[in-house]
Image (cartoon, rainbow, N blue to C red; front, side, top):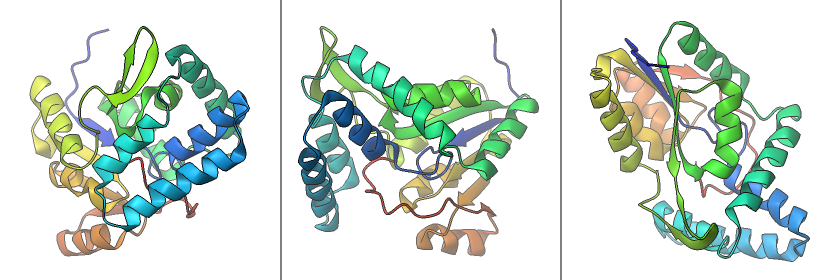
Length: 232
């Protein structure tokens, strides 16, 4: 089907379109399915959190996460993703205000795009469920169907999100004024600043300042989960 939109809407995923941080939630599910010791998850969460608190850039911590999956078969991750989504969806995974906004954009014929530092194993089922036109995310590197622990490019965070959305706008000949973006975290500021209609989800202090000063639209965020901010 040919897509020829007059407008586009870009959606961050974690704690924007969904109510949790997908990467850690998925990892807990996948490792449990593999029969891993729960202490492994605790150690991984503690290590990644310590690195973030010590000032290590989120892009590097994002890479560190994917190294936890070294040696995993892509097919196993995809199966875990389908099962994880099925479980979490009935628990209220989708965040209603943003899910409804995406539906309104889709019904109006707008291009809908998910943009996330997470990866397709857990994002693809979400994308299919909400009927998004495009999914832009971090891509783990695989050789022979097995993850190497590295990624194919840089993490889809911060400026990378903004650059990806700009490329999509250019390919569909859309101007910033024809585009919307939804995000919850200060790292989404480049994404939000690059469109004519930014929408802040939740109460991030940095984004709240911008929303008040620039009269950006706002939506309520999901209840805080306290999960690690290692995704996007």
